[in-house]
Length: 62
Image 1: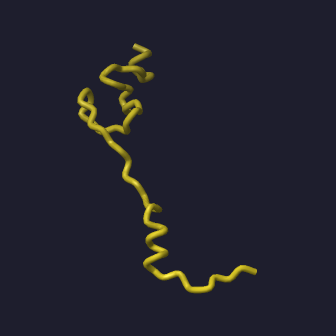
Image 2 (image 1 turned 180 degrees about the horizontal axis):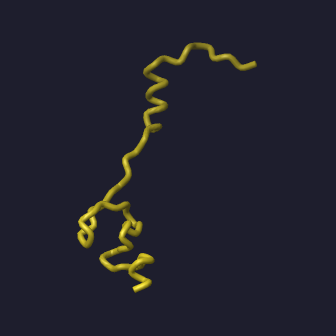
């Protein structure tokens, strides 16, 4: 059975795990709505690149 010859120090362990972290989502301000949205995603109101690509059910029924 493999056993480490020496104990891994806190510094070495933390250097190895330095890239393991939570990342904040990349938000972009949408000028058409005045809201923030994720990059390359449709806004909650249905806009993408300044154009409305999805119509809500309320608007579609009118």
